[in-house]
Image (tube, rainbow, N blue to C red; front, top):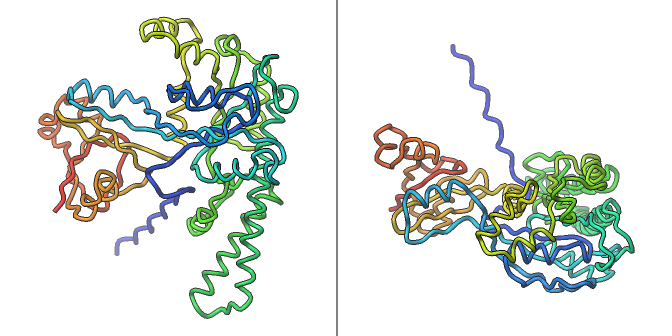
Length: 392
């Protein structure tokens, strides 16, 4: 008798909203370069860059194209009338100060804006400039990072305690018999574990160890510290080009101790602003100087990846387009991003990989090589798939 197959491991549920339209918020203390960074990133002056705290009160929003050499190659190959890359939605949020969790500064508005995004670009100031005031008096990135982490955690603790209190009040009459009662008890247990993670373990929620069932409860709480953070260290142009700054090793050490695994990207708003003002040819020339390359593409890609986003392509003479989906999305839901009818009346997808198309040179050659696959409803999309959908 053949041995029984081991059961397939449960697929890990992702932290965060199950959506393809995710947003990333630019967060930091006042006057660290958030709005100036937002302006160069979005190529606009929507963010009010000003030398005083709270210059940005209502968050500004922009869609940033995500650089992708695969998309460029597909456009060169198909020469379409229209080309639509993948986008990352970015939001410039007002500066946070110590005491925000209790409403100081623009505290409550700030934290509600952070709650509405799915990931965080945390801008950390590591440049000295007597003309740009620092809300805390002097430049100390470790103190600034500590302030933001503390404020986000305090707000989460307040939120979780309130939620737990409500659950326990309604849970006093729970028995052990019904499935609903058992589920409610499990939910209380998970929320207690979240509170312990924040208080006793002094950890951000995204650094906790969660089962799939627990993640569903965690996601329902929309916690600030469950959101992925990419740390962006704003250096002077000189420090960025020479890749040296006294704070960088200390910032890396702080992240490794407090939030191991979170990405850190050094960049320079001053350099990015200077490059943004140059014509295209001069900008390309300026970036040939060793160390003077723009970091915006790298930052955008890091934000996109931090949200567990991938893309697939649809290609033809009319349009080459990148469609954003979350990792683990099945074929019908991926088709539904284009139009709900494609999901509701899904028949199958004809899928090839970008690598196969590049290797063989044309769709006909991919087909002749037996690499064009018909995939049904269970198929999980892979980053870079090229898809043609069939629906009834």
